[in-house]
Length: 281
Image (cartoon, rainbow, N blue to C red; front, side, top):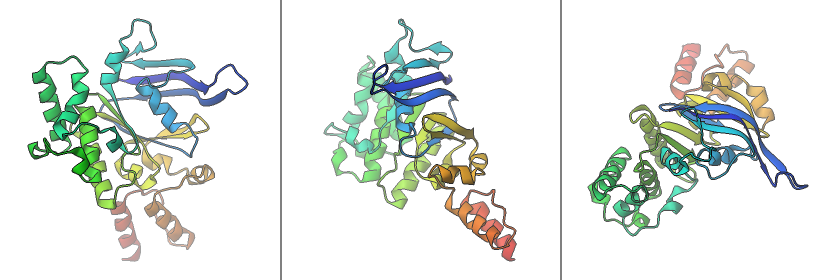
């Protein structure tokens, strides 16, 4: 079920002297089973964009369609859309508030009018997806590590069985191991559970490794929308925006600038390792 933005614009204080245009003519389509990263400099409109997908903000003009139907129609079931698009904020552990893990994960589906059996089944499946077994059920979320808290918060969103999972810097503040485990989990939700992943990130290394597609925003407009390998070919344009290319790609550019014929189109650690071995073999 695609989620489509058509000529979507958003302004704060529209029609006043204080009007500030944040999003301008955004045309995008998100699909299930696709891992999309949204990047851009500070103030480019990333967080504003994703807040439209869960109806936390409403467009000033343009449209947002789910499966071809405008969600802004008077008769559209907006509550149903929120069950299809799950939003996980930065530092998602702040979304935890129940005394026990399983109770917290059950909170979302309880508000969907489901039976107790359906609520518990959905929560149990969500916890399975994030790698938490029944031994966590009665623990306090506040006793867990940072990475475990985030798994619980994501499980609480997954328990509502969304088709899209929207995450705003979900690995912020985690140590390298916790960060990798969380991003591996999110990738698994895409490839194995078929969720559409929409990830806002400032880490070019992360999006190069995990994303199928990268959207680059600048001043509220889409500058690039392509596969990571293609987006990172625009090194100069990205640097002008204050963005970078992955560290491994920077290494390859450094070699080429020193007269070594390195392939600067590579973006992963593994393929860069093979390229360096080839060059110096």
